[in-house]
Length: 321
Ligand SMILES: C[S@@+](CC[C@H](N)C(=O)[O-])C[C@H]1O[C@@H](n2cnc3c(N)ncnc32)[C@H](O)[C@@H]1O
Image (cartoon, rainbow, N blue to C red; front, side):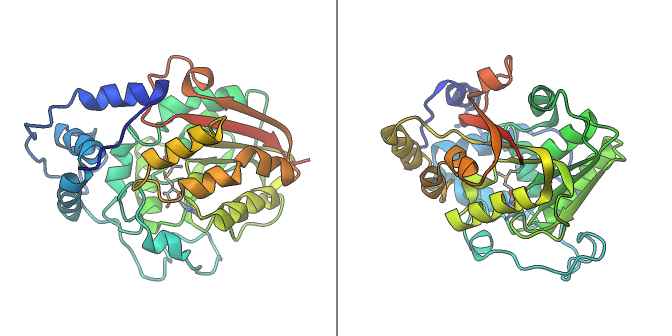
């Protein structure tokens, strides 16, 4: 039996939330369709999520079966509905096409709801939760254009669009299905200043210096190191001089021992965590020539009052000189 342990203060809170679910009595399976796909997480999904984190071997076939019954967010094979205007089709990196993350095949167009409700556990970036963080980081900014790299179903993109109603906010993701789902979510919230496109964050079709703010949340720890480096380089190319960035991602523990322990605990759901730890994101960002770099560790410092998610995190902010 594979058991994922949670340590650390925020992880403890996530563990407690999961522990409240009774594993022995699976709730009835709801029927999810395109009509109710944006509904709240159901008791069955909470149960399944706890199963995934406590008994992966038993849970994964159930998770696959569940996802197979989900509405699909597929579309035209040439991505014509999700590419930025005038942008050519692009290739997805092999690791994204082949390596499941959190046991989930990211490329499967039926997985999107799992990420939408999974925000309760994996990424904490529900719009309401991440907004106070962006408010704090960007309190003195008056951005006109904002890019959210690897936006997934769009929670942080939505938060930025709601915080900066006068800015044009763009979310990009490798998954066309994430883009389609995110568009539907933003439309339901009545947002007019937001757009989502399929793009590779390491090689976008946007011009140099095009954005005042670039954010990534929980994208870099899911990359082989050369891919993470490409994304950081693209972040620099796309920011205007004086533009600011935020990386919200898995915490870089202070000691090698703690880093290795975290890598071991996340073995399976986080196949690239070891490469991310070796990168040492803060050091890498400094080496790339970003300035005014600041790092905050842990949700209680980052967003006081936030009850915590399943993973400890850090936020690194900085500026392109
Ligand atoms: C853990 S999810 C985080 C999603 C979202 N940022 C959030 O905080 O909820 C990572 C996302 O990054 C996307 N991604 C990974 N590599 C990418 C790349 N090179 N370019 C664009 N998106 C990428 C994945 O498809 C996935 O949706």
